[in-house]
Structures are given as structure tokens and as C-alpha cells.
Length: 255
Image (cartoon, rainbow, N blue to C red; front, side, top):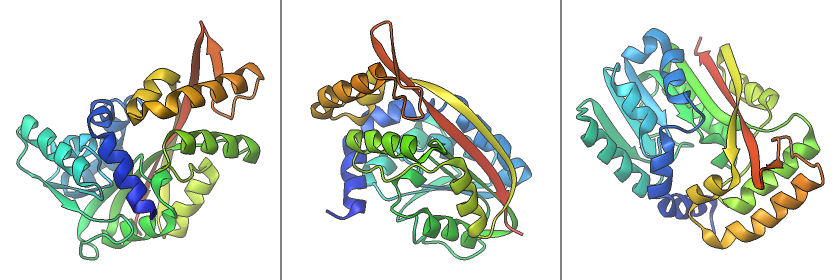
């Protein structure tokens, strides 16, 4: 199976559950993305791998036009529904791949992506495409979950994430994420890092694949009881498996 097929299969299955979670993923990250864009958020804005459109809809409140792109038709349908419910008319959605954006060079004042890079086989072409479609002086915001700088802990967390959802490829440590953004040509202006608490059962509900829950629960509990936190604070409290996702939001500009 090609990786893009894994992504489509996973997020078609998750269409309802991820849609319900999308607006609150990572806490106030939707508002943080909008704020980090500054004045550029009032122009034409692209949301790469927009999913069910939670970020796109928030961007549209201020943008001249907000465009959402995603490779999964079921996600785009949820995004359109969100747009209709909100009564927004300055939004449009496109089906396409983040690695080959179907837009002209330098056609957006701002480009954002949230919770997408860890589903990409290689983030470099995605970031390169974001750089290409952004106008000189434009603003980019990249928000994603990250892993520990400790390689062993990072490998363990990524393994757990892949068992839960095979469309997951690899979460990056912050240092590597920033290096990839700069390698694409961006100049980083600011970064924010925070931990969002998670609860195992709710985390598994989102992926909407009950067959994976019991074995992964067994693995996660055994690791926690052995004191192996996978760089994500994995532990058992009050009988429940808990952990955190470490988020990073990086704001950058195109020179």
C-alpha cells in the first residue's frame, strides 16, 4: 500500500471522530496559529493538509480568502460542512497533495499547516512547496507534535504512534523541525513549545479502530509500569494511562 493510501484510509475512518476533536487539538493552538500570522492573516491564506477545516474556518474570519487543501475527500467534506455551519463565504477547498501544491508560485500572503508533517514520508518537499507558494515577505506557521531529543525515547514514541495509526510516519524533535524549516528557505521569527495532556482511552477513540486498542493499551501500561515514559510522560494515574503530546508552533517568513 502506498503511504498516501494509508493516509486516506486512516482519515476516512476517522472523519467523524477527528472532526469532533480538531478544534480543540493541542489546546488553544487554532487561536495561536491565527495570532502568529499577524497582518499577513488578513490576506490570502492557505491551510495545507487542512483536515476538517477547523484552522481554515478560524483563518477565514480575518482573511481576504482562506483556502484549505487536503488529500482526503472525507476530510474536505467535513471542512465544507464546517464552512456552511459558520456561514463563511470566503473559503474554498481543494483536493491535492501537500508535496505538490496546485497553486501558482508566490500566490499567498500566509501559509499554515497543523498536525500534518508527522503524516508525511518526508517533510522537506512539503515545506519547499509552502515556501514556493508564499509571497516574499509572507508569513508561515507550522504547528505539530514533536518527540524528545533523546533518540531512544523518540523511537519508542514514534513506534507507539505508528501502532495506533499506520498513517503516522515520524514526529520530529524540535531541533530537526526547525532545521527543516530553515532548509526550505524560511527565516524563523518565533517559536512556542507546550505540553498538552492526553488520556489513553480518548486518544484511541479518535483513531476509531477498536481492534488496536487492547494490545496497545497492554504495551503502554507495561512501559509505564517499567518507568519507560517514551519522552511523553507515559504513566498510570488512578488506574488510567496518561501522557502528554509536546507541541511546537514555529512562525517564519519568506525573505
